[in-house]
Amino acid sequence: MFDTLPRPEVQGLRMSRIREVANAGLGRDDILAFWFGESDQPTPDFIREPAARALLDGRTFYTHNLGRADVRESLSAYLGRLHGGPIGVDRLAITSAGVNAVMLAAQLVVSPGDRVVQVGPIWPNVPEIPRILSARVEMVPLEAAQGRWRLDVDRLLDALTPDTRALVLNSPNNPTGWMIPAEDRAAILQRCRRYGIWLICDDVYERLTFDRPTAPSFLPLTTGEDRIIGTNSFSKAWRMTGWRLGWMVTPPRLLESLGVLIEYNTSCAPDFVQEGAKAALDHGEAYVASVRAELAAARDQVLSALRAMPGVEAPQPDGGFYAFFRVEGCADSLQFCKDLVTRAGLGLAPGSAFGEEGEGWIRWCFAARPEKNAAGLARLAAYLASR
Image (tube, rainbow, N blue to C red; front, side, top):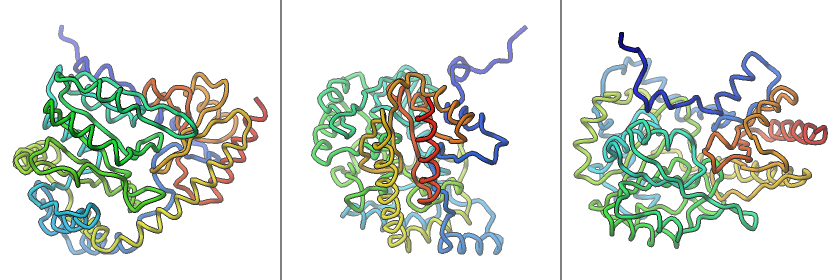
């Protein structure tokens, strides 16, 4: 008899520990949840309304594998404004979610046995995707020092050896909020060019910054000949998490193969969903600025309260919408977060969900209304006082 088990790489996957904690709170209406990475506010009307009209008009048919031409043109114009230089439609594709873009990037350039370097802690989907493809993943850890998250660039460069197939960088980083300093980009890019390493940039939080309109990007430093793939999403800056729409920036010579790969993954993104994305790109700049302002206030609210609690260390995030903090004596973040659900009605994400580099830490998504953050902080303070 033959067994009915999946491939060993798939058998080795485990449920996200974020979901594991969330499942422990299912069925309870008294939970204040901050475990998932999304706002507690819906997508704005100026995006929802054109998408709704397109749906009601019957635009429910297949579109181009790479995305509608007019949406890619709007994306090209948006990226040109953002990064101060042209990024042509011959480098752009619309994907079915940002995580789909990360998977497509890996499928494009990563083969079984390849060595992939990543900076962690990091959202669990990012390292598991190369492992699903039978690649090897090596982490270079971020460090908490002097109240901020930092990357030892020399350590990263040492890890970028000639046998490295790809480097994946997520900046601003989920869960820490670390953002790559602009001055570190050149050395990393030079090393990738030297050894022909693919640089996959997960830029989903690039607009969620606190001291500038956008995070430092590799795109302005590169040409279409560089081995660089940018992956991004409409989810965060425009509060479109449930829309499942993203994009990719690739070398022009990769685009035809990417279109074929999209065909064999999802075929295309829905027409009416792309209509909402076009509105976000064409008319959303003032809205993104307002989101950044709200998140800056939420960051200050949550970080100041966390730091006032005895035994809590909370480094300053540079971007994103997470506080990644640790509590003195917390060695098992998964059990800690499950206990928070049971005893405090508070839903946070365990640091171990983001790799062994995150164990002992806790993630709080502060993309919530001030009153919700305040209520959650009060529950955490009471729980810690009772320990």
